[in-house]
Amino acid sequence: MQITSGMVKELREKTGAGLMDCKAALTASDGDMEAAIDHLRTKGLAAAAKKSSRIASEGVVCAHVEGNSGALVEVNCETDFVARTDNFVGLAKEIAALINAKAPQDVEEALTLPIGGGNLGEMLVGTVAKIGEKISFRRFARLETPAGASGMVVPYIHAGGKIGVLVAVSGADRSNVAVAALAKDLAMQVAAANPTYVGRNDVPAPVIEREKTIYREQARASGKPDKILDKIADGKLAKYFGDFCLVEQAFIKDPDRKVSQLLADAGKAAGAPIAVSAFARYQVGEGMEKRSDDLAAEVAKQLGQG
Image 1 (cartoon, helix red, strand yellow):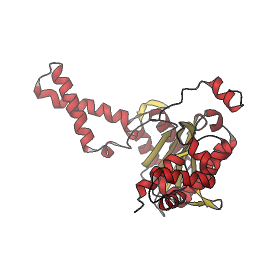
Image 2: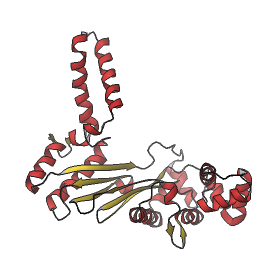
Image 3: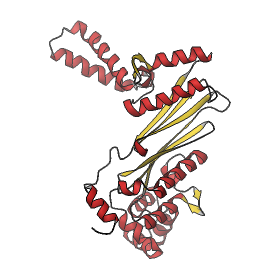
Image 4: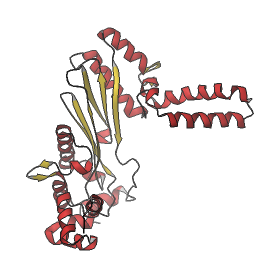
């Protein structure tokens, strides 16, 4: 039976075992998922398999920046208690450094990267046994400025690793102290204001048309004449850009100025255009199911009293 990547992925999600181990188990069991799980359990991966159904929505976001590139990763565990430990934070930092150095295409490829005498997937399975909780490497983003061109990637980690941001700026490198400080401010802006796009040109045309349609219908429903519906829609669309596009947002440190004005002023001072080429923002557990345990129960559990 042909073993597909989808089958391997499903088995990995169910057991937490490494990709190559999952493929070997499926091959040995002729594609039978339950038999493959049993195969992995006999190889000592029962602890990881047992914990794979738990909810891992706590964790940290870490960044690693070196040279002209940076990586942002979210690594999850089950409790905030574990997320704050040095060992767990160290693991996340190690993963961020690996991602930045190797630049994999996705998490599935990242789990095959060599590290510590094995691969990352195997390392995570081993960590599950040591920590006693489900560990999940959920996602990553990697930003890079073009080689030979002036630019920088700047990180910002907020609230002890609950929110992390990377911002890539073109037009100046870290030797320009003023632009580096602005880039740090813009990373904080992304953390606080949570924009979706860099500028209005990055907003997909279908999104713009959908928003305009909604605004027109709202205006029509309120009794506005058809001849001014487009004008009203354009006005509301400008506000949409101001909410969701970084360069059109009001600067958090000076709400009377837009981010685009700050970039223009920085460009004049630097003698070259300064622009944000990309950004990434992660918040731990966003969009995930949350645990319902209270703090007292969590601590008791960690102390073996619950």
